[in-house]
Length: 243
Ligand SMILES: *[C@@H]1O[C@H](CO)[C@@H](O)[C@H](O)[C@H]1NC(C)=O
Ligand SMILES: *[C@@H]1O[C@H](CO)[C@@H](O)[C@H](O)[C@H]1NC(C)=O
Ligand SMILES: *[C@@H]1O[C@H](CO)[C@@H](O)[C@H](O)[C@H]1NC(C)=O
Image (cartoon, rainbow, N blue to C red; front, top):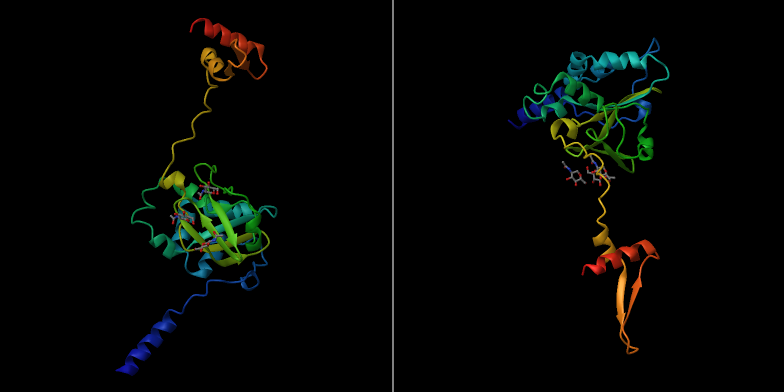
């Protein structure tokens, strides 16, 4: 019986070996020598991004990435959520999104720049992603040592491995879908700049100067200290007439 349990667990172990998450850039697969890398090919090879691949295909964001990367000057950092990451979303979450929201969600996982692990500390927050703006799509990235933490305001996670890197494209594995506020908890848009406050001269003039009464010399004199503005004094005296 013991033997049976042992062999069953051994079997399970071999069928489902623990995945090695952290992969140093040097060990990551190198680009195909013929032409630019295909985002689909890279993700497929890893085996744990089937939902992401489906989403990249249905929105055509994947082919946009491929054509962008065919230009040698373009650079891209991509946070790739695993199938496990997608499976922790509430059922129906992806289906409830509009096409535009799916596109923005994917673009939110991309930085239009090549950011190596050691370069994350040089970014300033909020980090500009490919999504439309940093107000609805804020993303903060902080580092401590070699760990890189990502915060969306709704989700905290860290980079758990490098899936792929060449000198143009780097793909990091994340174990949570980066849920942007703009889609999952929209904030009211920022208020328009407030109009300049209307000055009520009588009130401000009565408040700002400091008046003190000096009764020490027998006579009573009123000393008014202002910022040195005759205008204010005038207003105060004008106000005083009505007291
Ligand atoms: C990163 O996140 C871990 C927990 O996931 C936390 O312990 C650590 O303090 C965070 N570091 C930074 C720099 O935010
Ligand atoms: C990002 O960091 C700033 C400043 O530390 C903070 O005010 C803001 O709420 C953070 N945003 C998110 C999405 O974590
Ligand atoms: C994310 O981390 C920040 C600071 O460490 C914390 O205040 C916040 O509650 C966390 N948010 C979530 C959704 O876990």
